[in-house]
Image: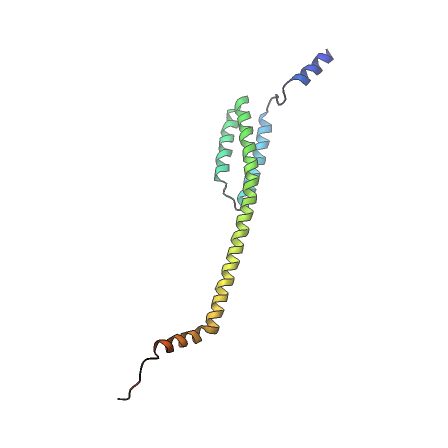
Length: 137
């Protein structure tokens, strides 16, 4: 009897087990936390939110097929949320570099105009007016 039970366990296909709603809800909470972290890092998460809503609808149905579909969707959300989080961090860092370079360039341009602006103005003015002749009336 024990041998038959062990053989049936060993020969059964992998992954065949009953999915409980508690497991799916735990996966849903984990996926939601990952999506929130991705959003905080600056990523676009509207697609992930839509997938979470689909998974929530499937969880509400509650049958075995719906729960397995919800698990698949939640696994996709988990992987995409991790990628989105790293992309969001890179995007925010790029934005900070862009702002820093812009401030530097505007400051450098202001300093150059302050130091050389009057010289360039008068040089251009004299060059444009050099053919003029002054006459006394």
